Length: 335
Image 1 (cartoon, rainbow, N blue to C red):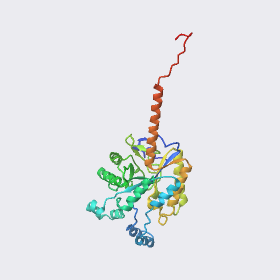
Image 2: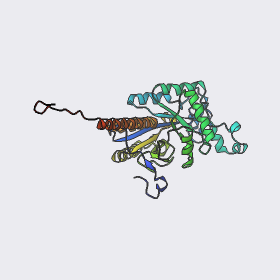
Image 3: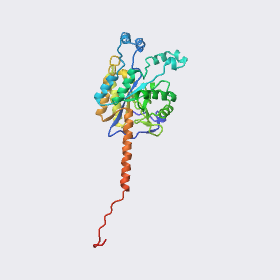
């Protein structure tokens, strides 16, 4: 069910009124690249569960969180492309105040921080872009109210990518409405996908992307985050039913669903069932007649269709203004 009037009273904004092509509904695919390296986080996870496994991954040269190739292959087989949002997190010791060092949660938060300019990461970013995937901005934890930091992170990612970044999502869905969106628009982003829940799946605020400033800037509400689903490793059918219900609701309401699967969730050793469920979700959406792609591709298709519609209207008006050719006939042989 969509949110009640009370729940969405602060979201009475204009909305996208069209879908690409003849699609029954839309499914936007996204991945937040939080921690592509498991590294020292293995030690933390070992204190929570399965200590033998996590300690073994800490000592191994393999990296179970590096799932880019697997995701690209899976999506290529399905004929779709998604968006990958890369994080440029601040360094706890050099970029954050000393007071932040005292919080254990901050140390956990910053463990596994990566450098987007490192050769391995930069190579993946360029490979994704070359293959037709979207590369976007994953605004860092402290950036929602810091436009200068957001601009710096965007420029750094664009320097690696070699061209402009058009959208993204804030880390942990941290969002100040509407200020963060205003910052996004000011630094040159076309859309944001941060509006949603980390614990509940559903249509939060709207069946369609929102226009918070009544212009071309779009907000794609997040419908499904992987961690908010029933665990497909232990309750696959329950997780599948949740996805099926949302797909059906989307189809019945010409909606646009946006889903988030973190790359590490494609590691079947630690997150069994998630890769299978993701494949099922995309395939099922295609069966139901959905347009499937990245939010950036959705924006481009709407823009192209709007331009085509404007061109058609201009052409029609031009034809209407063209004087008709008048054929005269002589009457009685006189002209």
